[in-house]
Length: 137
Image 1 (spheres, rainbow, N blue to C red):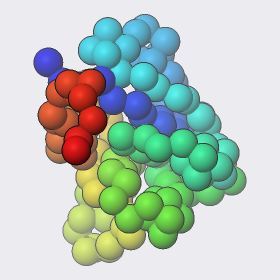
Image 2: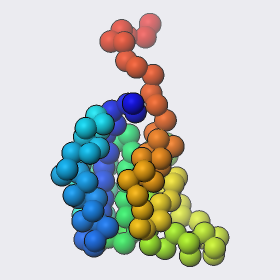
Image 3: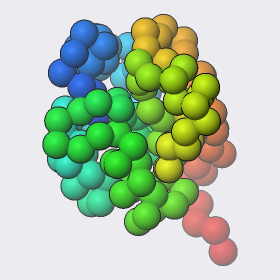
Image 4: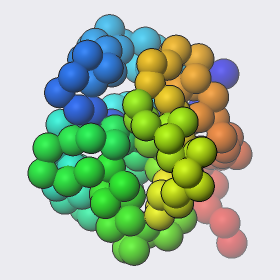
């Protein structure tokens, strides 16, 4: 089983965004021990990421107020090691054009399966060693 992770999940107000919202509401990821904070606007997601550490930020490319690539670049400027997964309908175009997405660690193409999301999460946030409750000395 994967370790419990804290996600900032930013989804566009479209059918895939609704799928992600439904996924969060259904408790599928919560049943795996993950905690999810859901937001629809990139600028609001950036404010959250500035104040709270997240194990993974999952963002859509097209969102109100700030695109996902802009969000990723802004987050990485402050937290270079923050894992960021982007979901986009433009993945094939981005790959074929060789366009770099600054700050994006993993790209998921729309439409996608829950298993695609799980795989990206596993790659973005590798398993952490279990906490023993003892402080390192």
